[in-house]
Image (cartoon, rainbow, N blue to C red; front, side, top):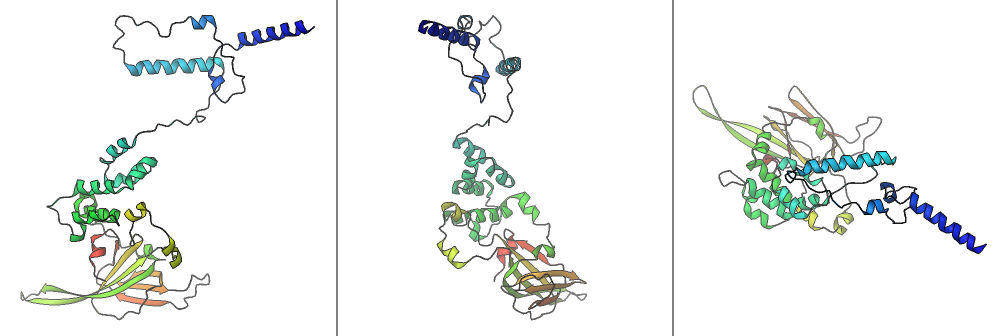
Length: 331
């Protein structure tokens, strides 16, 4: 009886090897089919490793050969009845950092953001000092005017390197320089910003009258530096340790904008530093700004609000932190 059991077991083992001897794609995928024993049939083992190359086939295009192999593989998969999902395997390719550095040298300034979002390697390169130094030197020209604090010696210090290069591009890069001609006069975009600084400047312009005489005309420039940065505790700012990336991206004016209103007559405004802009409108050249330090109320009450009315002689101007007029003002 014991000899019969061994014989039956060997017959089952031989039958299993004969039926599952062929290697299929499902054996190496996430399938429920049991794995084969590794034994290959003699008919398959006697096949040559590669088909002989006939005369005149040495110059065959490699893309054609690869396409034929892909079609053959898909045909075998369909005939075997195995279902392969397209998203079951994540196809990716790891490229060396040297290649990403080479590609970064051909990036336009407006494509830097998209380049940094490709992968971790490209993001790491964009946040390196070498990338911004090369970008600065690529468009720098001694024939173009650049402020003193944005010249080549500014690259020696890496603190705020990214902001310095971006500001210099609005002088040296033609598409950025031409974009400065399109003014931004939307006061509604400043609602909710907090006033960090405010100052008044006196400007004198020379005008030519009908008698060809020079006459000085006075005008007053009211400037408000507004920020949309949320309030942070001093303890958090002191305990936060700066990394190398934070040093390069350092820009305290990243969320700031400058509002300028030109008036013909002087008006003594009230101090609104630390308050948030709740309302901004312009009617008949009269700019109305409403600041309040109290939180917004659902009942619409203006408790503690300060209104500023300025009779402007031209539409107000709004400048972002990269605009040359933003940091040329003395405050």
